[in-house]
Amino acid sequence: MANMMDGKVVVVTGAGGGVGGGVGREIALMMASEGAKVIVADIGASLSGSGGSATPAEQTKALIEQRGGAAEICTESVAGWGSAQKIIQSALDHFGRIDAVVNNAGILRDGIFHRMTEDDWLSVIAVHLNGCFFVSRAAAEHYRKQESGAFVHITSTSGLIGNVGQANYAAAKLGITALSKSIALDMACYNVRSNCLAPWAWSRMTSSIPTATPEQAAEVEKLKKMTPDKNAPLAVYLCSDAAKDVTGQVFGTRMHEIYLFSSPRPIRVMQRAEGWTPESIAEIAGPALKNSFMPLDTSDKCFNWDPV
Image (tube, rainbow, N blue to C red; front, side):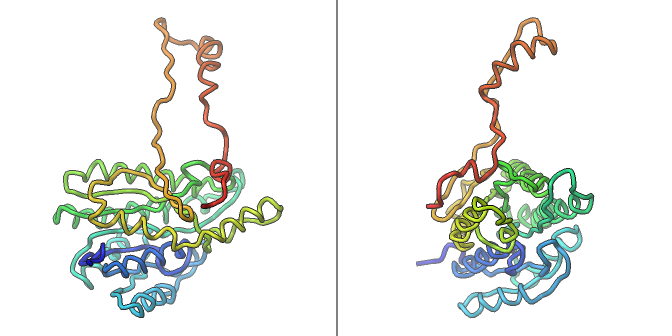
């Protein structure tokens, strides 16, 4: 029986086991086990994005090769137009084509909003949102010419729902979902698909979660059960021909759960023949709409059942 990714070449960013790399590494390993040739793209930076080393990418490459797969590494940054072009070019140089991109690279600069610095904001946006655009844009020219290709962009419930102390990360991750939808719309005529995946996993990124209270400690213990490999099957499926009709969607994975997120749509409409004034809104529209307001909750409150 043929593997789902036989003959395909895949770039996985942040696949070296570094920040978010627990997820990225597992996706790269499963891509290879399903027959793909893999570019392990990782600069080997710290949790906050500083430094760099080829070692994490080399380790993932070695694991793939030990299991009989084919892989090469690229240590270019996703956060620059030119370096992102080099990531995609490495797939062409080593394996002759590019069929799928998994945008997983990321850093964290958590902090409460009123203390967040300019660098905290710009650094996270640069890697997550700009990086997702730059790498996808670099692949798009090749996808257009060959009239095929798939993107999987790693998003987060921090952006889809909300978390405290992550304004930069949440903004970038929600922005990625809009970027993905735009890619899906713009490139559908070339048979190019674009989807998002919000993973839950214990990794270097989640290991920074505080455990100062019993509630926080209990939440972390739940997260530790959600190993990164649980997210890989959906990423592989979305990049395969089996998902040829799946595009513009936002999925999530948590332990053995797979879920599909809704997109924002109007849920209540108020109209008034004579138009609205601030006073009439306060008197009529505001109270009528209030029952449909979204709660000010966080992702842990929304997913309030234990992982299955």
